[in-house]
Length: 508
Image (tube, rainbow, N blue to C red):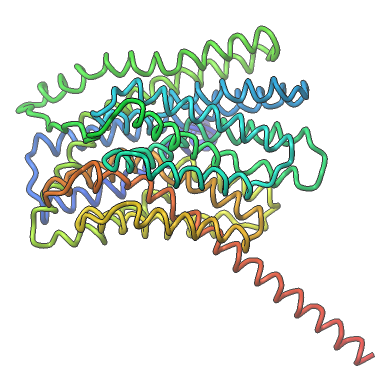
């Protein structure tokens, strides 16, 4: 009994399991409620959804535990080793390699690439990975040189909006979506750990604040990379890949559907994680020389990451995503199609509350600001922002409104707020935009939008894609508005303190 109590308290898998439950159960419960009350779904498809949701939760638990045991320690160890070297060229070069390798293994990107048929998945993943690597190198160089984040954001986002005018309209939303899916549970812990380690090289007062902003810049690289790819590759007709529901009539046939998909994802995940493993082995033999105990923990973490990622992708593609598409298709064809807007907002609120990458960011923000920015306030702000963004995305699906009519004013407002919000809030805001769009956004919200778009007769390439981009944009505005209100409260408190001191002097 004592052993079981100790196991329950100390087993880190329990915490990851609770995170996965909080992330998946609200969406799964809402889907079941819709299936029982409004949307008739065949029992074989519903059974596949439930099995996929179970695999999703187990996969997310193992994957997140593996990230804590392997990916984050590797990032911190690499960042610490680079700090000791103080070689700018080496730091920038290693940053590029790290950005490429961890992005290839990002599950959100794999899910998105599988839903775009205009460009081969491997080509799109490679292009996005190069974009992340290039901008991670740029972000590390900014930290070392102490350049203001605002200046780089204005330049890079300005270039992005100008290049958007040359990109085929049918591929524009996909490019912006790519910027949101690349900063997920695989890349965020690695990038944040690397940024903190590299920022330690500097001894000035602004070094800690400059450790934020890496995720922000890494979200821009994929957008520019995919835009360039669409021009070079001549991807004029980007469209969604077909989503097929399981036709299994019995439990054994359903099991065979999932089992037949496993070898494909075993190979896919193995290819994705192999570069990370090779990089770590080379770095360990030449630079790190970590003790055997840490190596064993990292090895176990890599196994957890591998198994969790395989289960996650299998559950998403075979069971979870098709039902999301079907729900969108049925709701979009009903008289109450406008219910998609509040439905999307509810899902958006719950999805972001337990997003692993969001929790990593909130924790680091709380620690780096010594509790000045509470994690709960940051999480609530993100939830509200994402709920609004998903509602706007569903409005686009129903009306055919171009994504640029929302993205351009939104980004211009976000860039304008950089002059009013405190610099640390600006960096946190642009980081939070990347981490808010996590696995559930690509795995459920995007298929939901694709299904609804098909039902209302819209163009998926221009009307449905862009959900991830909207989720990534609204936190930029909300967090900076939080920063502006925080600055006003501080000024008000300072004035009140000065007035009280003056009154005390008069009284004396």
